[in-house]
Length: 426
Image (cartoon, rainbow, N blue to C red; front, side, top):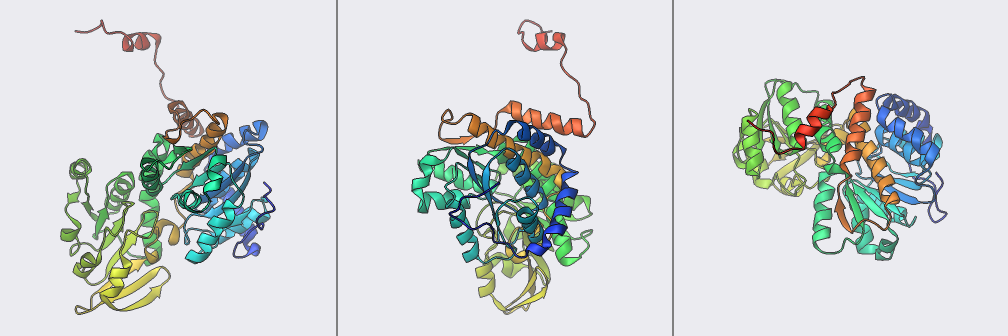
């Protein structure tokens, strides 16, 4: 996977980390049989040969295996981080040294470096964009509109990114097709619910080493990610409170056995707060002010805007780093301490390793097949958001079941006939 001469070959922390990164990438590959099967086919067919891509993703072991699959398809691509704290530096080094894939990502990079990487990647003049959070697409529209006519299509696999893209589509400025990977059944049913559920609590535990049993966890948002966090929290013995704005989801949370209330009412009750909404300042200054001494606050949404940390700083008399990924704010007046985990960035990647490889296997299969679908249908898809066809979703699920050694039933001719008639009845 070579790059255009317009940009340098890489910007990573330390190339000497490459060997360790390769070993972890190979370990993750063992849990990604679906992506491995796609890569084997891509090596034979080279469906993306001659195309150029920017992939803005969390630079993890799982993403590395997606990058290897895209390389097998013949595409010329550049990888950049989709979040300043989500890069695994050994993986970034391994991609450059061991696999010849250009990467521009450093864990802890400043916002200035992050934005510079986005702009550098766009210098590739891509045909395809894989985006987590839609920063690359937004930058292209605002700063590089001359690139839009070249775009075959883009993909987006985060809830937050799709919120931005729907707003862009509504404004009439999306003149290319986008695959809403996040809305594929083999993505949000599993990645969001099981991946986010487990990895979020993994991040909280690694950052704090606290026992969850007996604690009160406040989960803000009960979409698929919130459901996963709440489910896993309760499974580890926590008492779970859910805060929601959607009445359907709120009733669902009640029926699932959760306590449901407003954030205002939950603020003094929670021991641990986790936001998974994709919205801005869902925990605000007046909420922080009501929290008890020692409350822990984390975010598992894509961007760091869900917690209003500016407001928290304004009502605090001091801030202190207690341990990696734990900052203590001491509130004025009460002296209560509020602990913010992972700088308010997505805690599962800031303090842990992100989703397990076995669930990302399906998510990244969606990404790889979405890119192939966009190229195969170049010029045929209308501008705007699209779902990956149902048959592709089902293919990914079938491959996953086969890899797990699980067989399922199929319809008989009699069943098919019955389902296609209106005459049968009581």
